[in-house]
Amino acid sequence: MAFTGNYTCNSFKSGLIDGDFDFDTDTFKIALYTNDATLNADTSAYSSSNEVSASGYTAGGNTLTVSKGITGGTAYVSFTDTSWSASITARGALIYKDGGAAVCVLDFGSDKTSTTTFTVDFPVASSTDALIRLS
Picture 1 (cartoon, helix red, strand yellow):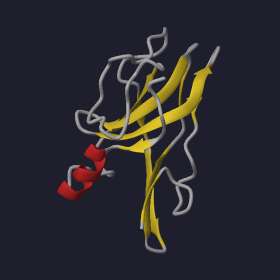
Picture 2: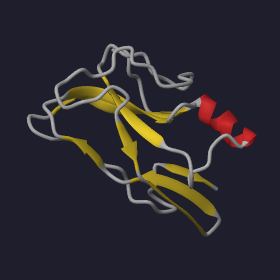
Picture 3: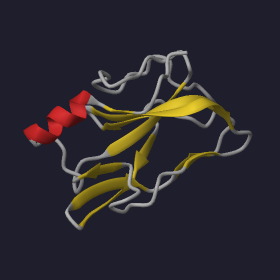
């Protein structure tokens, strides 16, 4: 198994400090991967190596819609659910800035398979539930 957990990528952490991310104007994407992919905190950018290959899935994945805000001193970012109309088996995913650094690795815990539509459900965009929270 190559997936060993969920990670906020180091490239995202350093990119935040350097001002490399703008959640108002940058394009963020999600790519799906097989269990053969090696993705972790040191993943620095999108790679097609061991990306899912299926009819109805395009390399590079889907463009994400950002949901963000700040409540009670906690800034948060999440994304709108995304899906592919395809039969897909994926072990995890990478969220990344299109043409830029990796943001985070999502480990699905095991292979997930769809027969018609593969959907990634994101948590609610709030200071207590969002995928990315800074306080």
